[in-house]
Image 1 (cartoon, rainbow, N blue to C red):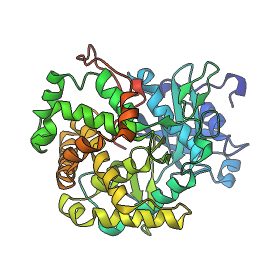
Image 2 (cartoon, rainbow, N blue to C red):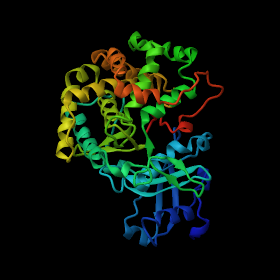
Image 3 (cartoon, rainbow, N blue to C red):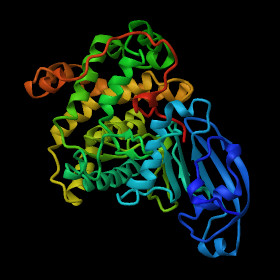
Image 4 (cartoon, rainbow, N blue to C red):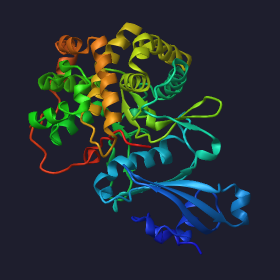
Length: 414
């Protein structure tokens, strides 16, 4: 039995998934197949719900190469309708972005968005049979592993570096809005600016709320230099405005160790990506600092940045100056630091948030980030876009608000 295409809808509950629905969904990639039966093997609740499914398909399905197990991701949590915008970014990526941009991601067999009902569903490859090794934020990487990932990111960034296709109304439109007819338009734009808005509107820059996080283990593990709320506001303004004055491209959007894997031959792979248009330096600073032990990062970060710039050159982009890039690297460290300082415990464990806050704090101390931003913010080139940033009142949150209401993807467990 199959569903009529005209009545096909994305399920809002796990219980709504049946063989007929799976048949219609998988027929997008495997026309003419039938799912005779299925078994839900595991369900993992989190930022989205991840369901591992064993499929029983007909002979046509077996000949077409339908895998025995698949991963289905969707918004099946109590809060899912409120944060549809964030997890829809990943479905958008599998549907529209990764088929044409160079990044090693799991195969996608189905990805779609129902904007009216605020649901997004992906059916993708189960990576376990491939024998991959999943990243772990508490287990830093070696130099060669970080460098290989930077090579892959440089290839991705170079593909759209300052491309005219990033302009409004063109291929990679960044309006990032639900349309009334149910379409999702564009990737997200300027993660630093979105994060600044999130910090204000959800209340994290209210003194009482900010101090609550400073008083946690993650705050104790970081330098008191960065417990200065007024400087935090200046830093967030500065990195938000950088998006208007630096080269832009499509980036992965959440490059921490929980969102990567390694093939048996060492090739890096990526998932859980909410792609954005923004300066690549944010992703560069975020990945290097997330993935290395503090002592290793001190020895290797400049060399790794140099490796990334060389890889841009190999992919057809005139690489920026190394010293200039290190300046932006130092500034964008603030994004990672404040992401993990205020990251709620239901997105990641306290140990995860603490070790990442400590890694970013140490990098900011090493690179003189505080004074660098104080001085750089005086430059008229950046002062003008900073002055144009939307102004928000700092008020304590009246309710628990999801990052997705502002289009922000909090670091989440894969």
